[in-house]
Amino acid sequence: MKNHAVIYSFRRCPYAMRARMAVHASGQNVELRDILLKDKPDEMIEASPKATVPVLVLGDGTVIDESLDVVHWALQENDPENWYPAYPAARQKMEALIAENDGPFKTALDRYKYHVRFPEADKEDYRAEGEKFLAKLDEKLRGAPYLFGDQPTYADICIFPFIRQFANSDRAWFDQAPYPNLQRWLEAWIKSDRFKAIMKKQPLWKDGGDPIFFPDLETKTT
Image (tube, rainbow, N blue to C red; front, side, top):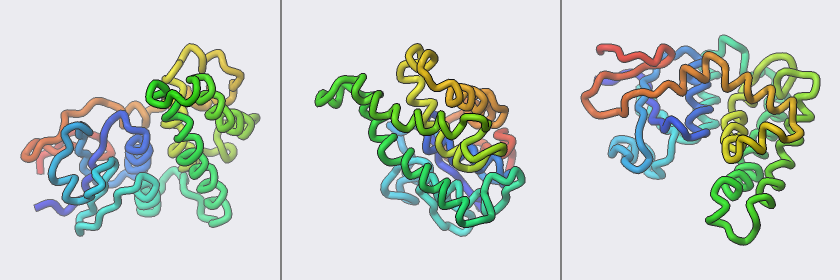
């Protein structure tokens, strides 16, 4: 009988990426169930009827199905790299930046990436809207390796998957865009050992298969 936490995830989803980064950093014994969004398992839908990833089901049956809440849970349980500030005022600033990422920037990102679905404006117009946030981040990274200074925080891991998605929508454009600090920051996260670990392709989850666990992301016999 399962007595550990389980997280349902889709490898390429930026929301799931931020959750996996936090869970991996926390070092907790969490089972990863990698799925396809076009073939969602009944167990995930039963746990969270809104059926979006990530979905974290704790050992006691508690369900956490918002990515930022998964990040908070993981780092409040264990935060060996001090990603989660102790001071509320510091967290409020980070929450505000994450909210801007998840709100106006994510809207611009979706329209930029899937511009054919939004014929009201040109792709370049949607890109320009997203650039407002890129410019803000680039300025924050001027003279500092991370968004809030010399050390990474959960704000970095919550935001960089979306910047990665924006960059990959037209990589040639992004690489020559006037955001050198942002480009350096993004590249460092993409090349980090932790991101490589959480992005490693895993077998799709199937009931009865060998479980795969954080932080090692290896199959284990239970």
